[in-house]
Each structure stands twice: as C-alpha cells, then as structure tokens.
Image 1 (cartoon, rainbow, N blue to C red):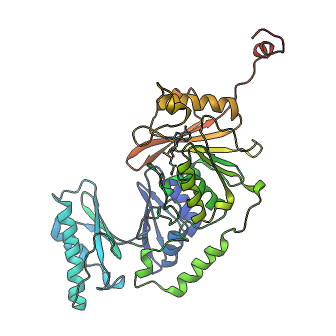
Image 2 (image 1 turned 180 degrees about the horizontal axis):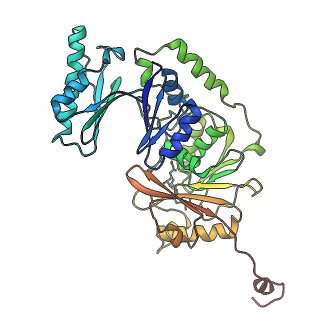
Image 3 (image 1 turned 180 degrees about the vertical axis):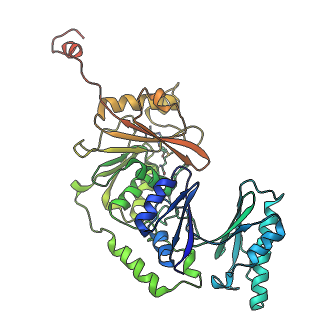
Length: 408
Ligand SMILES: C[S@@+](CC[C@H](N)C(=O)[O-])C[C@H]1O[C@@H](n2cnc3c(N)ncnc32)[C@H](O)[C@@H]1O
C-alpha cells in the first residue's frame, strides 16, 4: 500500500492550485493534468489528503489502466483487478462512469459490464457477490473511458470532499466549499489580512477562510469511504485524525482579533451563516451581520491589506436585493455599477475579488481588473476578477468647490 497511483479530481481551472496544495500535504512529486492531479502515494497519503485537501473533490486510487476496444475488453479489465483486497462481498458498490470520445454506443451498458465483472470475480473467489446500491453504496468504483483506454479507480472519499459536514443550512445558490477554497488560494490571501464577503449567503467563503486561519482540517468532521475498506487500520488512522484535531487553534478570540467578516442583505442567510460557523467551530473567529452591500461600510481599517471576496448574486439563479433590487428599473447590471461607486467612495485601499460568469463585468463596473483567473462554478464558466480599489481622489478644483462658503 506504499506505491498507490492516486488521482485527485478538482474543478476545472483549479488544477495548478491543487497540485501545489497536494505537494504541500504529501511532499511527493505531483503531475498536474486536466481536471485533477496525479501522484504516487502511500495509504497514509490517502488519509492525509482526504483529511487536509481543501481543493480536491475526491481522492481515488487507480487500480487499472489498459487499452480497450469493446465491452469484452472492459469486462476483462475489471475482472483482472483484485477487488477482494479492497472490500468484501458484504459491502455494497456502485459504478460511476465518465467518458471522453469513447467509441462505445452505450455508457450504461459499459457500466453494467464492469459491474458484472466485479460481481462475477467475487462469486468466483468467495461464492457470493456484493450487492449494488445506487444511492448509498459503501464503495464507489469510477470508470473513465477515452478513445482507446479504460481507467478504473476505487474512490476513498465517499461523499465528495466539498461536503465538509458543517454546512447544513444553505441558500439558493451556495458555493461549493472547494470552490470557495480555490478562490482564496488563487487570491493568495493569507490569514494576517482581513477578509470581508459582503454577499456572504450561507457563509461558505468566510467559514473556509476562518478554518484556514485556525488550521482546522476540512475533513475533521466527516467520515470517509476508506474507513470501510480492508486496508484500513484504525490504529494508524486515529493518531492522524487526533493530530489534526490538536493542530486546530481553539479558544475564544479577542474581539479585536476578529478579521473575517461577512454580511448579507437577507437576515435569514446571516442566521444560516452563523449556524454553519458554529458547526464548523469558527463562530468565535467571525463577525456576521445583516446589510446591503451597497450601504455597508468597511468593517476594518486598511492597515493590513484587507481583501473582499465575493460570489455575488448573478442572473437567473439568485436575484439582487436591497437598494438596487427594489428600484423599479434596477437589474443586476445596476447593482454592479452601484457597487463599484460605493467601493470607490468608501473602500479605497482594499482589494476585491469577484467570481462572476460575465466576462465583461469590469467594463460594466467601469473598473479595470488587475487579474482575471478562469474558474468553473459547476458547469458555468466564470472568471475570478481582481480589482485594486482606488477611491475618488478629491481634485484641487473639487476642493475649491467644497470650501465652506463656496458656491455648490
Ligand atoms: C450567490 S449567493 C452567495 C452564496 C454564498 N457564497 C454561499 O455560499 O452561500 C449571493 C448572495 O447575495 C445576497 N444578496 C443579494 N443582494 C444583495 C445586496 N444588495 N447586498 C448584500 N447581499 C445581497 C443574497 O441574499 C445571496 O445570499
């Protein structure tokens, strides 16, 4: 179990960041591929990655990779894997299949073929086969087909890793925790810098940031599929888990030390965010408030290079509310124009990062971005725009205009 081929998928656009993170966790060489990263690692790496990766969606062990032309080749490829080293006929399993330019006519049939091969192998070896459970299987087998090769993986995570266990209250368009973490990683934010999300919704960005600041492992509160697998050794896992629990910075923070802030126009969302923060063990490190992003003033000074990080209301999935949303002619576009005006008036010296699907957002806001990072929010292609906010400087002529007694 010391030379496992691991593949960690992630959202498109996040691969380089994930490569960096995985290298930091395992200290092993990592290959950055499209859609994820690959590395050779140990069973211990599997556990550490599940526990500590904020950017990976899963940790999978590659068990087969070979050429195929038809279903018979798939059957043979799946039959030749020693599945009985990983799970027993008492476990349930499910095949998830993806493909890129596969010549096969039916992916469903390909998945059935792989399922049959695994079941037949167990029946042959032990006299009984494991059952399929398409809802809550103990074991997820992932098959990926491309033009001429099939790859089979066993998933060690179970529920995808963005399900950290703390977000039970969410709004209409919650950001995946892994994407919130990717936004923070792409921005280069560090916990010494204040962070503010003025459209915080259920608090995903703020909670992720607070967990990073407090060194709380993202997987500390959830179970993993590997805990049911045959190579699992409780006496190895428990100290790893315990060490992570002890690494977290705990204790109530002094109010002056709170530098992570969130607000939302919907008070219901602020309640959700508060409950999520409590479950995530970071409520003492966050300040959450109600309020319109077009009216809220900066929650701190600019002394420590503060950052705004926003997944704003956009388009069909979620509407703008508050001042812009209640105006008769208002729409999303007005919201962004007014947001830019508000920032120029009150957020001089801040850096703002906005994740949006609109490639023309900077023009609409009449702001020039200093960076744009491609990122996918599920199927939606987005950009993470960086704006270095410079307030309106008062010109000498304007100064004259506002002199007491001067004509207005
Ligand atoms: C896309 S959601 C943010 C989701 C959040 N990142 C999460 O993970 O839950 C946009 C949020 O903006 C809020 N919103 C809409 N108009 C607003 C305004 N004028 N000021 C502040 N928040 C606003 C909505 O209530 C919603 O919670």
